[in-house]
Length: 293
Image (cartoon, rainbow, N blue to C red; front, side):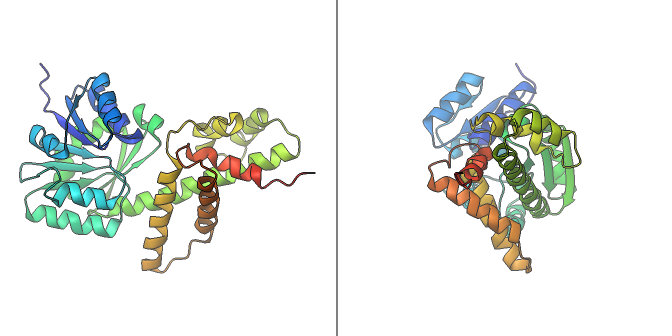
């Protein structure tokens, strides 16, 4: 029998499933919940225990990882009567990309109830995270971070402590902004090269070896070249994150002109039915903007 205490995972989408895999590989028993039955079934196939509700996860596990879609869902799980029914014995690690101001406030409310709350949004797609190559951007008290260290170390090989709760989310929004724009710039460059008659696979290697290199070329380059948009990160998730960036930017008085153009690209892709494909599908929008000769 494992000597490690069970860890709950609430939200078993692309990221949540990768996190569950990381925990299972590290020897943690995992109990998880998602509203989608097929995702719960998939966790069971991986060796975890499927739960019928968030409350059941809270009853089984004192340490819980959240990988849900947005801030509303995080708040509901932590505070709603229909949530995980948390108490002073629980430690929560929130990996979702959320509104940092609301997470800062939520962490303070949770602390008053004796709940330890660590935010740890992750940089990296589901494939990177499953391989241990995600990066944790941590916010919270150092004491709570230390308590969560065995879980955090199992999830990611690299982490950064940014400060109080909310700090990790602020860093994540800025990181995601650069990541999204890197994908868009690469797609535009590839589409331009293609329109001039260059073969894309060799040209991608040229870019990787040049001054314009970005990690996006490693994770998304061949997906764009081969038009393989099997999702490692849904495009709809990217749109959610960029809209959140604009909300936060409006509060702090920062214009995001390039992010505004990225949102237009993504919204056009979604209008073409591509929302559940990988966010590298922006390549298709670049191709659609090519005029026939």
